Amino acid sequence: MLNVTIWNEFVHEKIHDEVKAVYPEGLHMALAEGLKNPEFHIRTATLDEPEHGLTEEVLNSTDVLLWWGHMAHDRVEDAIVGKVVKRVLDGMGLIVLHSGHFSKPFKALLGTSCDLKWREAGEQEILWSVNPSHPIASGVNSQIILEHEEMYGEFFDIPTPDELIFVSNFAGGEVFRSGCTFKRGQGNIFYFRPGHETYPTYYNPEILKVISNGIRWAAANAYAFKPVFGNSKPVRTLGVLV
Figure 1 (cartoon, rainbow, N blue to C red):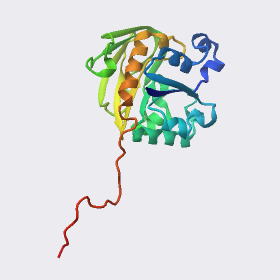
Figure 2: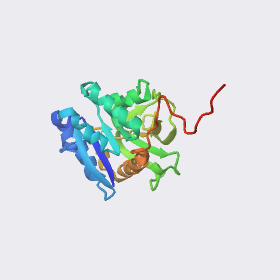
Figure 3: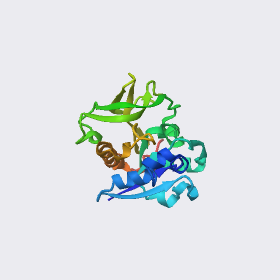
């Protein structure tokens, strides 16, 4: 069984009625319910909990961490960011959702601004599967149509992805790299674009299927053998130099 921690800042749902109407218990709880599966042991964590809910015990027992944030990126403590980054480098999987592209852990791991174009107009998005043989795309339709979503557009300031799984196009004409994978240290990272807080995207079975696949893929190295660095003793007896 994979240990999955869903982190959500849980701010919009408390102060914006239009968001609370869509996700009355929070995005994290909608995801936890939608991803419920005998393969996954799911817990949630939010910004206002002690250590943002990401204690050493939680992080060290997490195979895959999902991250959703938007309006409170700056409130995430740098010490916690450092612990998340270290766990990813040591092998924990990380799935960054929607506006989590601006989160401190994602930016720290990718090393770029992770900036992009955006427009909130409730327009249609079509996610095209451009790597259908990839495990994250397994069993997913060649296109996923979301009738209402926020637009994200290129240029998306990220390093060239290791793999591109999905590309979106929007009613306004923009395109976007919506499903990207990266390797950092021993950890697998999957960025998946959909999920604006005022639209019911996280109730969509196809979106949940992609995220479930992403969890399985990202978990591959959660407890990988850690490389040993520094001064090293020989594995064979060295001859004496004369």
